[in-house]
Image: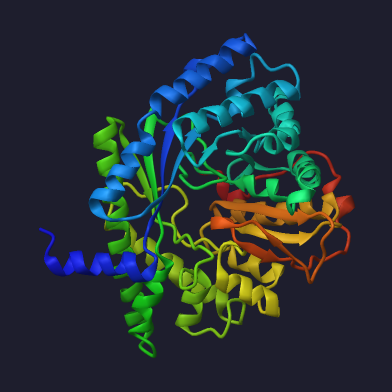
Length: 454
């Protein structure tokens, strides 16, 4: 039974501490839409999405109104389009037509974003996957709600360095075509190692081939709630600190579980997972960096940051798994720079550097996220940054990612403005020493020895 004190406590978390359900994401399989005719395949994709997701936004709005918990986004993820379009796409422009179809379908059903304009190339690239990747600058520039992800490596297969090199070039092209808008198209593109099949967060969401025909996944938030809880135990031992984080994560995850089950029942679509990642926003008090400061750091990036983040991530997971039978996706703590006011402040004063962020990604939920760098940064340098992050994921058997914005025409000391949940970010300096000869080697980095577990 839920008692009145729990109701009052949850209401306070919503009203004062920025608690929200960040997203209900409806995953849709498009495997049954595959057709050798490009026009027919696009038609099937549009019809499948608009039919399956027709009640998604209305259902989310109803739940939000009835239980009083903000549901910030309603989203869709689909089967990687490189698979769907493989039999009918003969050139990159054919894949662009799928991006338009996804965008049109997203607008018809009213969702905020749609993910799955994706390719999985951790060991090698098919012709179709290479064409989709080469279509990204045009596809992302000509659409509003389409998000793309490319999986470049895994613990089992190693790192596809040919794809890493290509993605460095593509990210520069994506930045160039959107330079009049602070290279904002790069926000809709992320590269992964060990990408999960059930991630509800963008830009990395896609509907994995192991998933059911349709599935409901929910992503929760709540950095502000954790920060407020920790304010009450300042100076206490690590044991008290950990218990407080666990108990708070449990409460936050229960909210996500409730929303997921309600959405599943009302839409008649199976419940998949709750992703209990702490997802910050630019709002004051809704910051993962502020949690790290509450743990005892002057700024995020100070010595001890990686240890504090490791503690936070682990306790969030320990508390969350007790609140839901199915926890998945990324689950942990996001550290996006532009979406977290505390991270922005730390980066501005130099407490937080790109190298320190890379170290933090060894223990956080994902990786280098929403980081703006000088527009003059070479494609090979971007590829080197990606390779480093992929290696962390591969060796540590975890998901890592890079969502980086080379802001064309801007340099260290400038900032980029994205607005809304995406916030703004200072341009961070990048190590300019060359890695050209390394990146330009062909082939792949082999999987680590501990990957051979059969």
